[in-house]
Length: 98
Length: 503
Image (cartoon, rainbow over all chains, first blue to last red; front, side, top):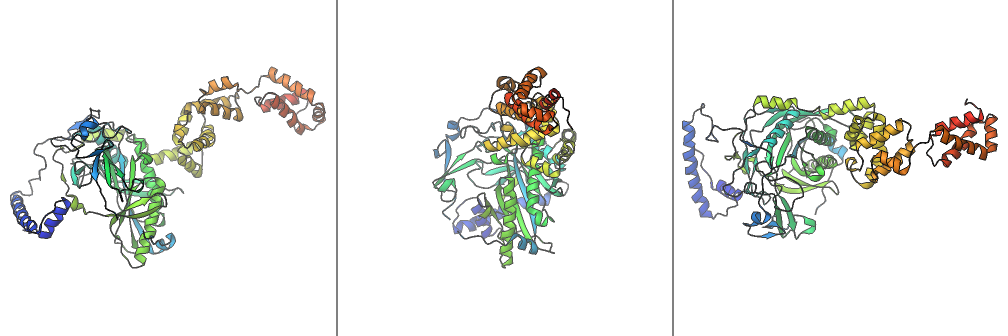
C-alpha cells in the first residue's frame, strides 16, 4: 500500500490551486491515504475478467446533428461574471512581470 | 533580455542528429461546436456564441457533433490510420482563463485514429515518409485579449479579457511519431509535412485550414542527439508556429540553439517556447507539466464512440485522390517541369488552373494567364488568386476568344483588365471597349490600300524584293486600326496587294 506523502499532497494542492497550511497537508495526507486504501480494495475483488467501467450504461455513439441552436445573448453569458469589460470576461493578471 | 547563443547550422548538423515531433491542430469547418449547438461562424461579436455547455456552467451536458466525429475518421483514414473500434473522451484538467470549464474535453489513451503515415514530397522531388502516431478529437479554447502591457502581450498586462466564442470549436490534433533520419533536411521535412497535411485537409473538405486565420496551428518538438547514438535528447516544444515558412524557421532555429547549449556542455530544459515571426527566434515559455499533472480521466458526461466498420468503410470510399498523387498527375497532364509545378503551388494557382481547364481552356493558356497577368495582379493587390474579381470560366472564355482569333494577346490582356475592374464578363468587356481583332478582309483592305498609298517609297522597295520592309507598312495598318488588326493577316494582305511572296 503506497502511502501518500506530504509532498504529494502539496503538489496536488498546487495543481488544484489550493493554498494549504502545513498542518492541513498532514491532515489530508492521512485522509487521502484512507480513501485510496478503500478504493484499492476494489481491485482485490475485480479480477482480470472484469473490465474497468467508466460509464454505467451500455450506450455508445450518442451524437448530435451539426445544426446551430440558439446561443445565450452576450448579456446572459456575462451575467454571472464577477467582472467584465468590452463585452468580455475580465480576469486578473495571468503572468507576473518577468 | 539575453541574446540566445546559436551554433551555425552546418556545425550543428556536423555534430548532432535532429529528431522532430510535429503536433498540428486543425479547426474543423463544422457549423456548430464539438459538444453544443453554438455557431462557429467567425467574426461574431464577443461572447455571442456561447451556451451553458461551452461556458462550463453547472448541470449542462455535452453531446458530440456527428460531423466532428465523421471528419476525425476521414482525416484518420486519409493518413492511413487504423480507426478505433471503441474510444472515449477524457478530461484534461488545468487552470487557465481561456478554458472556462477548467478542463479541456480531449482524448487521452484512446484516440479515434492511430498508426498511420503521410508521404511528403520535398522540393527536389524526394519523398519522405512521416509516421503518424495518432489523431484525436478535442476542442478549442477561448480568445484572450491582454490589456495594459505592450502591444497586447501577456507579459506586463494588468488584466485580460476573454471571449469564449471559440471555446468548444472542434479541433483535431494530429501527432507524428518521432521523425528520425531527416538530418539536415529536418526543417524542410517539417514544412513539407505541414504543407501536405494542409492540402489533405482541404481536399477532404473538413476545414479551410487557413494558417493565417488560426484554423491550422503547428507545435514543433525538437531534440538533438550526438551522431551514432540512439537515445533521444531532451526536447523543446515551440508552440503556435503559424505559417509554413515559420515551421521551417522554428525547426532551424531550435537546431542551432540546442547545438549551442549542448556543445558548450549545458543541458536543454524541457519547456515550451514561443516563436517570434519578426526575427525567427524562440524564447522560453513555461516549464511543461507532466502528463500525470493533467489528471486525465474518462469524460463521464459523454458516452464512448464506437464507429461501425460499415460506416468507416463508407467514409473510406469517399476519400479524394491524395494531394501528392494528384499534383504529380496534373503535372504530367499539363506537361510542366517539377520546378514550374512548384511555382504554381507556391502561387496557390493549382485549383484555378484546374477549374479553368474544366471550363474548356487548354492547359498552356490556363497556366499562362493565372501564372502571368493574374498572379501579378493578385500580388499587386495583396490578395489571393481566388479573391480576384475574375472566375476560371472568365479566363477560359478569354482563352477561347484568343484561340478563335477574335482576340490577340494584347487585346486579351485588356479584356482581363476590364473584367478585374468590374466591367462585366469577357464578352461584355469586348463589346463595351470595342476590343475585337479586325480580320475582316473588307475593313482591312481599305487600311492596307491607305498604308501603301501613304508610303509609296517603302511599297516600291518591297516590290523590288526587300520583303523585310513590310514591317513598316504593317505598323502603319496596326496604328490606323488602333492595334486591333490581326498582324499576320495584315502582312499577308500587303504582300498579296504588292504581288510579292515571302521567301
